[in-house]
Length: 359
Image (cartoon, rainbow, N blue to C red; front, side, top):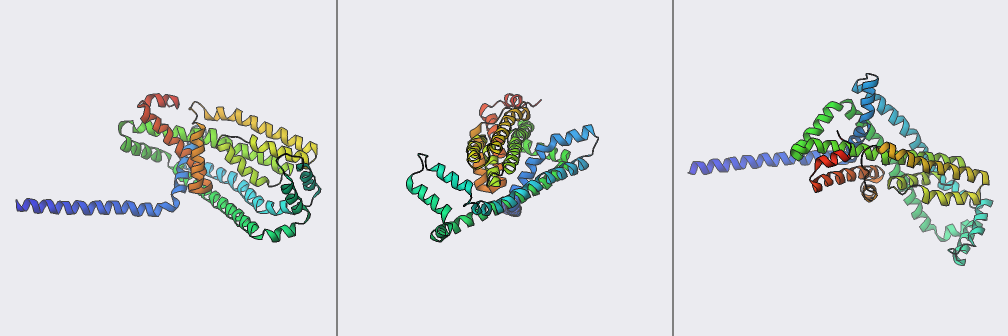
C-alpha cells in the first residue's frame, strides 16, 4: 500500500512538472510572438485571400507555388509601397501647405460665404475672420492648443507609417505561406479538426471563404474606391487630400461609403475653385461611387455578405486595439467569428456551407 502511494505521488509530481514545462513553453512562445502577432495574423489572412490567384497561376501557367508566391508578393509590395509613400509624404506636407493659404482670396471668399449660414454665429465668424487676417495673434493666444494638435497630428502620421510597415511585413509573411500553400492548408485543416472535431474541415472552409469574401468584396473594394477618390482629390487640388483619402478608406470599409465626405468637398471646391474643376471632381466621385456598387456584388460572389454592424464593430475595435493594420484584421477576424457563431447557433453546418458557396 505504501509503495502504491509512493508511486502515485511520484507520477503526480512528474505529471505536474510536465504540465508546468508544457505551459511554460507555450507562455514563452506567446511572449516571443506577441509583438508580431498582428503581423502574423495579417500574413495568414492575406495568404488565404491571395490563394485563388496562386491556384490560377499554377493551373494556367504551370507555375510552381514558390515562383507564383514570389510573383504575387512582388506585385503586392510594388502596388502598396509607392501609394503609401505618396500618402505619407502628402500628409506631412499638406497641413503646412493648407495653413500657408489662409490669406488667399479663395479662403477669404469662403469665410464671407460662411457668414450667411445659420450654424455660423457672429462670434465664430469673427474668430475665423481673425485667423485669416492676423494669424500671428491667434498663434500666440492658442500656442498650447496648436502644439497639442501638432503632436497629435505627428503621432497619427507616425502610427500610420508604422501600420503600413506592419502591413508590408504581413505581405512578405503571406508570401511564405503561399510558397508552401499545400502544407499550410493541410496544417489549417488538422488544427480545425483538432479543435472542432468531425466538423473541423467544414469550419476551415467556411473561415477561408469568409476571409476571401471580406477581403475582396469589402476591403478590396474600399481600397480601390479610396485610391480612385484620392486621384480625383489630388488632380483637383483639394486641400488635405491625403487626410480625406484615409477618411474615404475608413468610411468605405465600414460600409458607409464616400458620399458623406464627397458632398462637402465638392461644395467647398465650387466655392474655392473654378466651376469646371469642381464639376469634373463631382462627376469623377459619382463614377467612383457607382463603381463601388458595381464591383461589390461581383467580388463578393456567392458568399452571403457579413452584416454592416459586424464590419463596423470589427473595424473600430481593431483600429483601437491594433492601429491601422488592426482596422483590417478586426473586420476580417470579427467576420470569421460571426460566421462560425452562426454555425454553432444554427447547429447546421451544411446550411451555412451552402450559403458560403462551399461545394
